[in-house]
Amino acid sequence: GILLAGHMRDLGFSGVQIGYVYATGALAALVSPLLAGWLADHVLPTQRLAGACYLACAPILAWAWRQSDFAGLWTALCLFQLLHVPTMALTNVVALHHLPDPRRIGHVRVWGTVGWVAMSWCLSLYLALWERWAPHASHLGDGLLVACLLAVVTGLYCFTLPHTPP
Image (cartoon, rainbow, N blue to C red; front, side, top):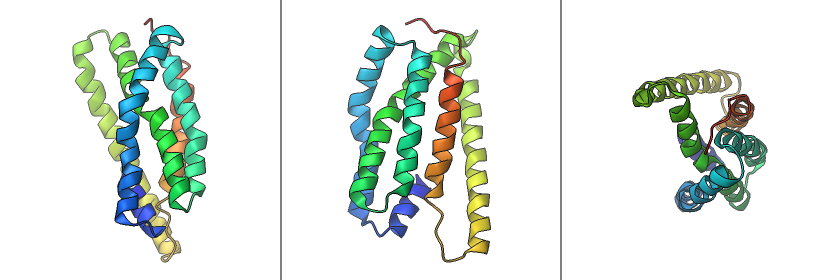
């Protein structure tokens, strides 16, 4: 979130435009979980649908990284959010199904947070190194490329999981 706001600021977006980009998450939260839930119940196993969503997010994130105007970035991130928002619910369903004791989901969530913090530290180190090498060049948008790579890894991993019945 913070890297993206800084990236948009560096591109010259206004505060209102930055707000519109962040609003794409709320728009997606209204629509996409309903469709994803229906698809998981009737068309694809949950983990396969999550994997497909992650893999579809990857090229969109790469495209978003290349955008420098508001309309292009807003469109890319709106498409990304439409595909990414349902993955949160889908992956929770898969985790709850495969945990021997579903009451331990909190332990799984803690490690997700630890992973998020570790990735944030890695990105901070990356940005600090770039700040030393090229102090006047912004690399905040590179977080979109990192997210692209993580989407590919996560998407492929989802396809290795055992079948989760609806």
